[in-house]
Length: 208
Image 1 (spheres, rainbow, N blue to C red):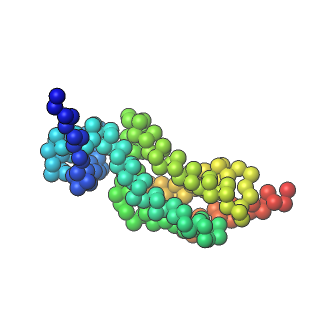
Image 2: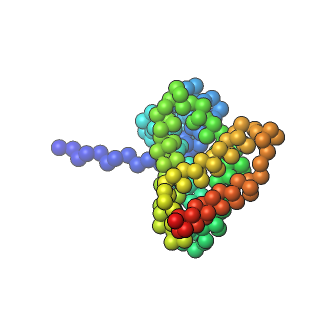
Image 3: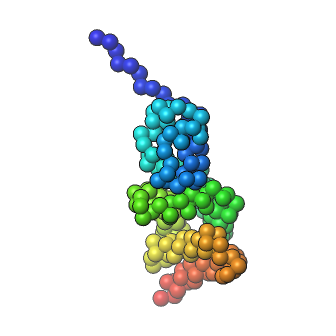
């Protein structure tokens, strides 16, 4: 009896090339018009190689979301900073890192536009983004609000949603919808007001 063949090892270099090719094609053509054939050409690999790494277009797209989480959100949510900084310092740093990432990296914004634009036709892509990005964001910030010794919030989860929601709304209006000239607002005003809201809520709860 012949021994089973060892499982084929996937190449990290080719995986990276396919992810880069996939991102290029998705951003240029949208999800529906992108094919695995085009991804293979962009990545400079064979179609068989693409399918040996990703079973279909949706799994490739979800892998790009995971890459976004690994590459950006671990840096944005610098947990070691939370242990050393005051709530004001931590929340200011968090908000500024989110906005810096979005404004300084066009690919990040374009990928978010793609997900929002395709969310009606391909709701599974939007759900994958929410599960891997939004849910993680809310969960980590909620944990911080719950366990930070300086904060005594009645509803850490709702406070986390308000904080993240305000930052995302600012980002969408100012950057994605090009509203800087129509409804201008300095980021420092938004961030300062949000932090005051959180810390004032703490004071309100302690005074009840």
